[in-house]
Length: 148
Image 1 (cartoon, rainbow, N blue to C red):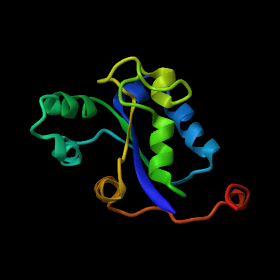
Image 2: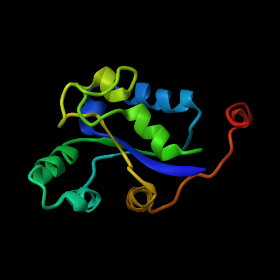
Image 3: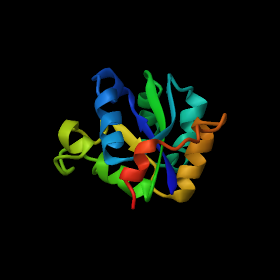
Image 4: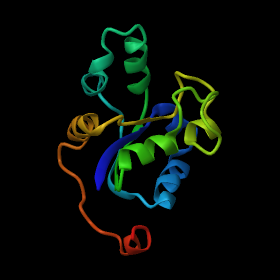
């Protein structure tokens, strides 16, 4: 089992897609173990995107993510990182596969609705950053019908 970090960005929240996005992860069989709506501070977002600090898009990205509420989530399941990234789709919505969140709802590389951790180290860092209070560990009864 892996746990990964997923964030609905301000454009996804403003467009009313939070429920649709959560539904897609739940229907796949992933377990929601952390959830909060927050207008993130500049400091939090700067820490989150620190790996991109030298990139030309960094300041615009930080400004965008702090512009309104985001929904921070932690999802758990077998291969949760790659499963979530497949559900999310390619960064540019115009190039993302139909059926993915970005493929169905995204038209821009900047307004791409959602973020998902890209690896185990990144997930651990992001989960610690956004959920310092810890996660909810529980086992849904339906899980015996998801995994053999």
